[in-house]
Image (cartoon, rainbow, N blue to C red; front, top):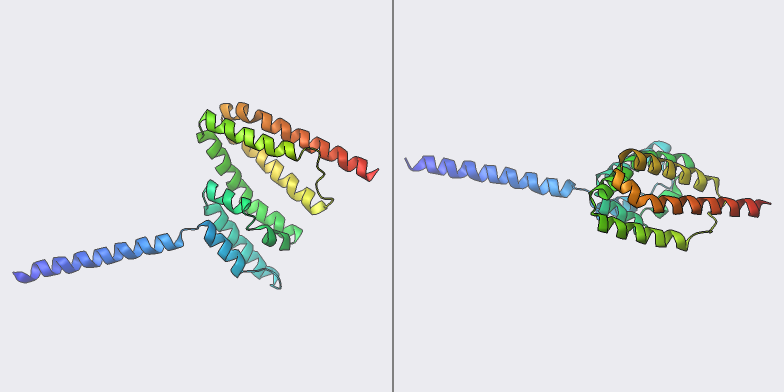
Length: 195
């Protein structure tokens, strides 16, 4: 009669060991901003074959798509991917953007839709201030920059118009107008420069 409780205790210990292992590996597998920057640092693409480069790009894109909106924004603002992105060919840059932009913009629209009107107004005010600082600046004379900027804007507008709530669209309208104004003045500046 003493042995049944011993078997029960052993069974519980095994269950707890399995549960603990699952939790440990789940936490370890969770993608964080540090995971992304560590991966980029450990997998430089310079000198790799096209196939190896594609694998690195696709794995990094999967990691970026697993980050929360805030974490993803932190990686972007921290410039953690700038060197990696510049090392890509134009085709690789386009592929990386194709793999990451839809998820990124969907996360941004979800975040805007969930914000309180006050928080959204703060976001719009800060973004407008940032955009006005750069009004009239000419983007680099680089076809690669133009293609990527166009891809980003197209995906952003597509996400905005299809996924933003009516309230968000009204709140963010001044930001869209300022963006169009900046784009127009940049285009005019480029035309004057070319003449």
